[in-house]
Length: 114
Length: 112
Image (cartoon, rainbow over all chains, first blue to last red; front, side, top):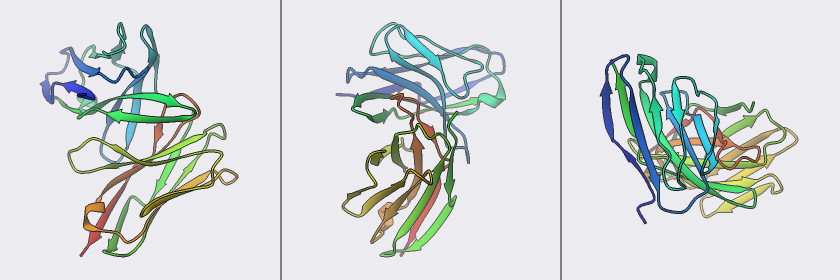
């Protein structure tokens, strides 16, 4: 199993450009999430999905869109990049075991917006 | 929504000493509390977790305690080793499998 994969690893965008961060998992997990990590602020939830066709907003959803057409894939779209979106983005997948939800993180995408 | 506070932000200990990291949460409905370790440039990885119906859980040198009344939980690492040096994050969930709210992290440094 490859686990959770993310592409690209690094990306530089100009203000106003759009792009899609890719995330895929091969563990048949029902749940998938996107987080951003900024220095001193931990990981903050952007959007999440509880299954194919179902998505919802997290703590910091503005400026981002998601969709989940398959169990495996959960892309994150930046509509019009802004310098405030410079961050490291982590995708995660998880499954439920009672009330225990172990999240498996991808390797991250380091995004810089100039 | 949930709010998780984590202290201290940095912690330096001598090898072999114990380290304790504390977190508080605000949502009394939270029932799952994982701890993640993140090494420099790497992804977060789960090291231990605890459910709300358990007060303490131990896994070798790592233990977590939960006080639901006070809404706080702590990570205890005994006999620290240099490879324990990393950033540790606590988190809380009120039942949504992927709706984790993270603390701001603790940079642990284990000195020889």
